[in-house]
Image 1 (tube, chains in turn brown, cyan):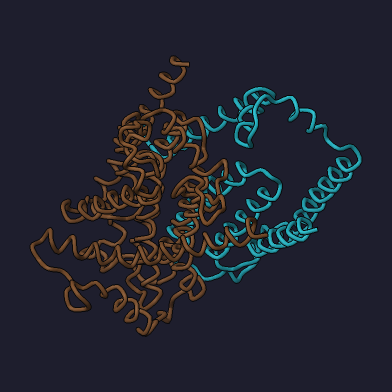
Image 2 (cartoon, chains in turn green, cyan):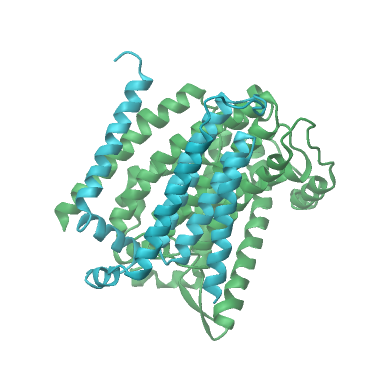
Length: 340
Length: 170
């Protein structure tokens, strides 16, 4: 009873709440980092160094008026933020924050579940998340959100192909689809897959930027051209849901990248006994540190690079990333066949 | 017992959403009901202990193909009011006849398979691999190799056809 029901439920509660807190503080971190990049201070008023700013933001968004445009498609307009938020959260079911550990005299695994199609689950759930943006653009019954919705669908479909192809080459190296199994393969192979599959790593990162609609690929919400993009007509908490979904997706991409390419919960050089003193850091801490690195790079990229033009974006996706990903896949497959 | 309840709930949801797909006036709503339908079909696969097929169902149908449907519907059929007039070419009787034929076929298959259970257990016992994904792959590349290759040829032809249609001059 406890092992089958209470512990999984507890894990789900912890993971979801940690994610939501992480998301709100990601917003603050982003504002701070971008401010520092531009020689500003960022939010400073609420709490010391603006540390309570996310809470103030949350309260503000919740008590704001929630407007539905008169000519909007009401059902779809209400469902769209939910549709974009839910997939971003349920992906965490398969992300391993650590192996099985002893906790309070009990064997507890630091992941909610380990299905043997874990990686495919991540990809398929992410592909459903596209609907949130498309439907928000369509149901607002306004031209800028519609344009943004069309851009978003084209962009996401294009980059999904490249990202999925890189995942296939990782699967070839690891020989399993299970997220835990992929980390184990990196442990037994004595190497992080970022070094085995550097090209896949790069393509995955660029594709991840595009799939989360982050700069320099944030065309679906390009403020200068589309007055805010697909969420132009949204206000209050529904707008906040889109915002949360974007940041939750960033955390998802970082966690998946950490699991696939940076050895997940493993400490650096997990098989070198001389570095055993590093074990005093708990496993999930390594995972969080690595994911945080990715999140920081996400923000860094946004502060550095200008936005791509739409045709450049499509050209990069279809004419550069996808052929490179296919080439990488073929080379990986050939090497794998030759070595076995 | 629990499995039966889950199955009948999902089957009812699948049928209900399928009816909504064809009865809704708004094309976008219709496409959305189709997505829900596919998701419930995926849930049914999970219930059948086929997680790989379930995930592929969501990835390919709910996440891939229907996004393209939605794309086309949004581009083509943006502000058209619901059709009020009757299509003069509509063949209602023929439709009923076709539906009855399909229903008969399904019923025949159902009675036949319940009378003679398929010998699938013997095939899975002979497989040298475990795990849902591995078993699907094993079957595809041994027993069903030729159908698999023919399907891939068909897809290739469809891809080439789409490119030729899209490019007016080659």
